[in-house]
Image 1 (cartoon, rainbow, N blue to C red):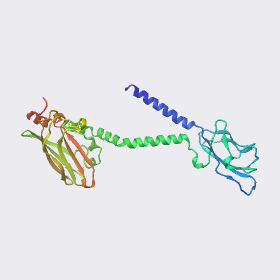
Image 2 (image 1 turned 180 degrees about the vertical axis):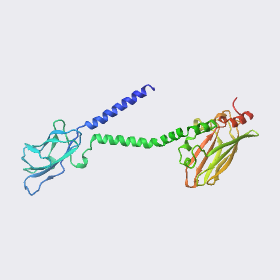
Image 3 (image 1 turned 90 degrees about the vertical axis):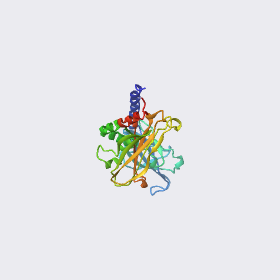
Length: 330
């Protein structure tokens, strides 16, 4: 599968490039006939025809013909191209530069009904499209495609920025992450990708493992939590098992929690020591057990919540206590 990925990317890039190139080379000759004037100071029998020609392509259109209703005599009244002319029943424009437009006003000797006008436009290399209103004229395809790709790229960038920022923080704090991971912590991305970390110096972490001990069959873990913000926080620490299939706990047994802390207030610029304990002896899969430690700043205002998980089996001190309790896997 991995061998096909570069090939797929190459094919997609080639198709995208071809699509963009085709958009820039596309012929875009348009005609708008906004009005047919039945009354004017020039005549009381004929019709004044207003013609607006648009070349939205990136190449010149040569020998442009605007075919008018046949069997009628026409007179060129005005044009913003000096070489515009009448040839039989057609207005002829020798050349229209790329990304430009031209206007022509023609006098027909008789009355022409808009529904029967059947005016067409063509050039040496393409047949154009006739619209009734200027706002119906299509934009330059190349610019439109470029704008779409830019919008997609911007949306993708905005969508991926949080992930990229978190990855940058992981790279920048690699030494700290390595040390914390070795001491039993996981889930550090939430903290490193948060605004809360701006209140801590580089390398600092709001949660600290202090000690492990035994109380009967219970594993006792002590943590310090530091609130370096200027706002009240609520802190929580408790043992838990992750959920496996069908939302069942994956530790395979009963987790007997003795001490935990839920939403304990912590004043600004203060620290607190939390103790959690549990009997893990009834669990057959103790490797899944962890302590979730969290802090929510400005909880009444629904402020930012960060957390991390502490794994007793991955910490040397707590692992030694579990072995003493004969609860660690041999």
